[in-house]
Image (tube, one colour):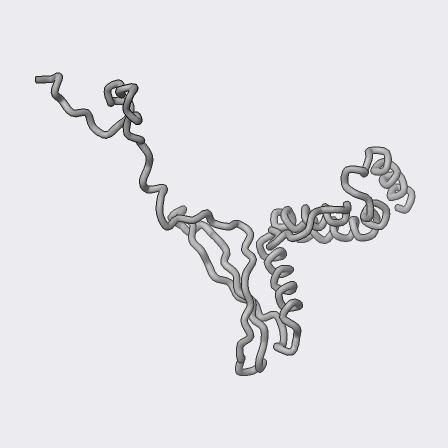
Length: 177
């Protein structure tokens, strides 16, 4: 009677499949299917032209940020930012929103162009990392790169920046101080 026992639905417990058949049943997690889509970590946002009582017609930018609540669950929060008067062109309002999202989240909202120069690399790196820096470190690094590094290395492609050019830059900076 034990030979007629039907195994549970677990592919490890099933008897060997007949080689002429299509194979045994597939064991997969159905909870992973359905409405769940991957969450974007770098929000792009959207803008609307609305009427505000004191300001008149203005551009308002909206975006979502994923945060972790007290329970440890991921929660989506909607943020908004007034970008300026409605007389401003839409593309300017969108670029203002992208800049604000970069500053708020520390991530680039939409990277449409490739990194061609060392200045582009610095801009992308600082947008990603500046959220973890203290205010003083952020100010110091932006000053140092704007005054010393980008004027001498900013136009070079990142792959062409060598140790020699970096050492020459450090030597010049030491002489200036």
